[in-house]
Image (cartoon, rainbow, N blue to C red; front, side, top):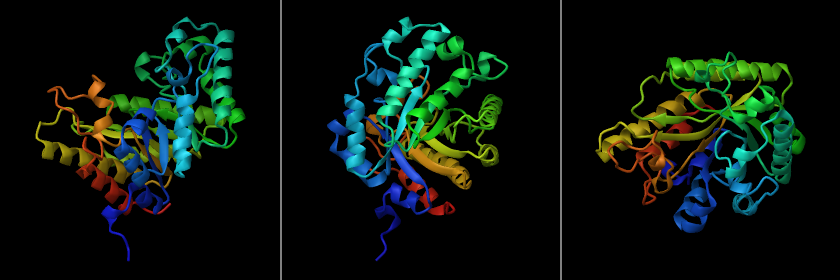
Length: 345
């Protein structure tokens, strides 16, 4: 007898359409909550360690690495037959305090990046489905002609730091898919159009230069109260990326209810509609191969601590497929239905 749709986990529904589905998770959540372990087992084919593979999570000193937490997360996933994504090898945030005193000259920064990527990606070679090699490299409002973000890596090494990071990652791990990860790519607004233009220009140059980039990660931090989502704009952008020979991943999907009225039912319905509208558009494109959430339960959400995502009335956000008591919300069913409706890969 066939299982009903609501008896199947999200990973199973996604896999039936040739899509990998997963969620971010941290060691603290795993150790604290049996319910989080249950949800992860039921719904995720992939785990993305949320803290443990960022610089601040395993670089206690310029000379040292501490992989205890990262190793824990790899074992947790692998013991359950789940794939793992690495996030992130190069990012201008989540850096340890000592980074403020790190070398800012080209030779010193290059040596720092080389050691970091070779050590981290090399340690987990053959065990990662993919790596976010460079995270959030674009910021059109920094007013550079190339649209790149003004970061310590850019200031020391120039735009070539991106190519360098990808080549180092490929040398360290020949098997992992190598991803450029960026936010603010889904809305039909002037700001996000500028970001899409900059991302496409960056990717075209990388492909032309033979840089081993294989996928673009669209973070997809959505707002249920936001205006400007047009499915055709997102689909056209995904097609443009696919035209470069690249895959597309949705890497950090969530929906804040900031700006919505307090009523829980109304908020949950609006959040669910946002998930469904975005996924219907993205999944219609065959280049979209992977979807991961940036939080699966409201019990453990980053949004309540973010001035950009938390509610202005002080109420806890209801952003994720499970509520803070680990019950399924309308968002869960919206995601499930989007996978059921998606074309086969």
